[in-house]
Image 1 (cartoon, one colour):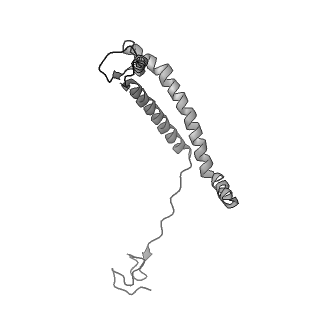
Image 2: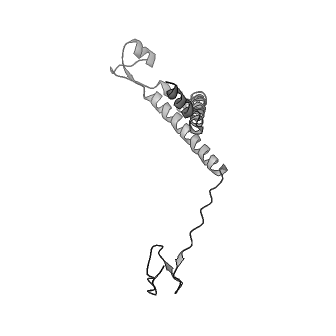
Image 3: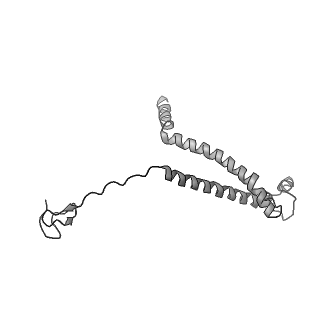
Length: 147
């Protein structure tokens, strides 16, 4: 059992795991901010533009009747398709995806660029000085035997 906990401790203290855990926590907090942005800032503006329609309250009752709200339909025991909430979640996703895209693009510019490894010089035939394959035993240009 001690070996199991030692392995678990080693696993948890790896740099990648800590970075991943930090990213998940920041992502959760960021999702809360984006939800607030969508619900408290964008949706009221969208509602104003669409004539006061509350996008998150749009639904279809599965019994074909009309209800004042989703809550009223649920109190009546009727199932609902809440397509407005689905549209709102799509908007949330698009905003989060756009922000992640911008963040990755920004971080890519900050990261130091990896220098390309210098190219290995071509092997030359000692007689005609033309390039030959590394494993060649005979020069294809002059026909000389290569060591």
